Image 1 (cartoon, helix red, strand yellow):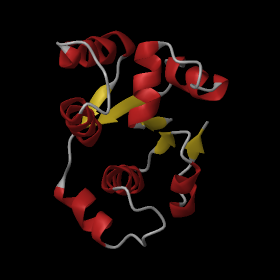
Image 2 (spheres, one colour):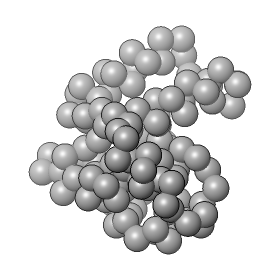
Image 3 (cartoon, rainbow, N blue to C red):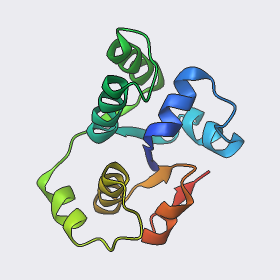
Length: 128
């Protein structure tokens, strides 16, 4: 299964956060799944760090790269087709990063590892 890991779920993996559900953890650790992290998630983390809304150690990008390497998570770039799909999404969810993740999951036929129930309104399969 192709899985797009939502930003919060990826951060919860890195920090060993108990909010990561058992199902989310199992999906993340199952080597049969192809894991992806959107470039939008790294962008979102950078913005939150710069605004002081997310505390991460200096060198946080190296931490992200390391986790991606050891877990086999591939970077999903933002493609024109993702942006085109984004423009036609209804506004069930207002967060621009989450809307882009939804568009990417729909275009790439991926499920999303997320605790955000609002994403299910767009009908990607949500794993949690």
